[in-house]
Amino acid sequence: MIDRKEIMDIVNDYDADNIKVGTVGSHSALDVFDGAVEEGFNTFAACKSGREKTYNQYFRAKRDSEGNVIRGIVDEASVYSRFDEILNSKNQQKLVDDNVLFVPNRSFTTYCGIENVENNFKVPLVGSRNLLRSEERGMDYDYYWILDKAGLPYPERVNKPEDIDELVMVKLPHAVKTLERGFFTAASYEEYLDKANNLLDRGIITQDALDNAVIEKYIIGPVFNFDMFYSPIEDEMNKLELLGIDWRFETSLDGHVRLPAPQQMTLSEHQMNPEYTVCGHNSSTLRESLLDKVFELSEKYVEATQKYYDPGIIGPFCLQTCIDKDLNFHIYDVAPRIGGGTNVHMSVGHSYGNTLWRKPMSTGRRVAFEIKRAIETDQLDKIVT
Ligand SMILES: Nc1ncnc2c1ncn2[C@@H]1O[C@H](COP(=O)(O)OP(=O)(O)O)[C@@H](O)[C@H]1O
Ligand SMILES: [Mg+2]
Image (cartoon, rainbow, N blue to C red; front, side):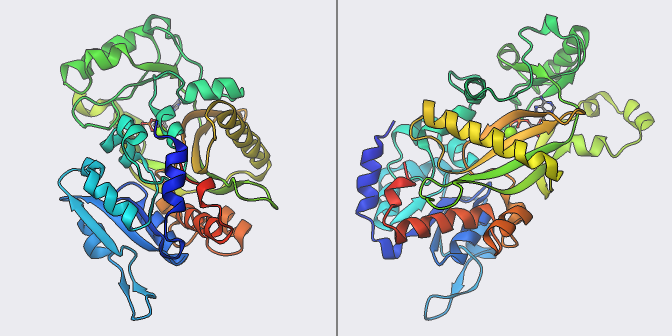
């Protein structure tokens, strides 16, 4: 792990009047750039060839002679043949020379590799570098471990397929669609074998992935992803904020649920198992009487990260939950960084963030606003790792 002190030294040498906000062009980058521009920063996108046009053409920024943005949000985009070229020392040096603060998202950690992010990317990250690994399901000290330490509710684990006696979710990676899910559900060991064999035969999952899959009880209820923010530099008001709530569109699950049951039953074998590939997001609110609980869960998560993952969570994080029929929360995933669904409040903000800040406040804008406050109070080193 790159020593935090080393990053603090780098950031202390930054020209605080010329900070740029950077991230990889993917995932939640548009929200980050929109927020950065709104708060008066220039932006930098690290793009992959073939996926760059969104950033360097369609959302490219145009500024007037005074530097005010007239259109768009991306000031500068570098296009690499692979995302992990950002790790090349000259590319990293350019970021440091340009006073870039880098906002880590899931694409960054997945495409660059968690080891590289931890050990080789010597650019200040806004957020907690050491926590990023906790979302690699199945690793030591992963988010389940943190939830356990914090006494937070997560779906009960089923240790071996033979023990399946009610609906479960089997979590494993997709064999072909790299970085996507090969998840499936089953209500008995027989069904597990049936589905697993079918998916193995069709090359959708591998035996190795299946052997290492996490099996957990399926929570029947709606999904709420809570886009939270923790500010280490806030000293008057609460350090923990709820900015927004989102949920996802997943293919092909969302297509399945729009078919009448008899039609679902006649789907062909290759259509029968829904996949869970995220392809969009929507926004939501939560029954008001449940909000207290969300804050309680989030406070516990923050506390546990501070205790076991010094310095603990910094900035945005996302608790992904299902709520059961008795209104209990079950946290099935935690993103210790900006969530993947925050574009849903890009530019317009979100009911909760706006209510708190009395202006449009998305996660991207909140990150930029945090940077601005840190600069103004000379505390940039407190929000980077
Ligand atoms: N225990 C569970 N019960 C019901 N649905 C679940 C459960 N775990 C995950 N899901 C569903 O699967 C989707 C992806 O799960 P998640 O654990 O977030 O995967 P990833 O780590 O790939 O983000 C969620 O959006 C949710 O709809
Ligand atoms: Mg998830």
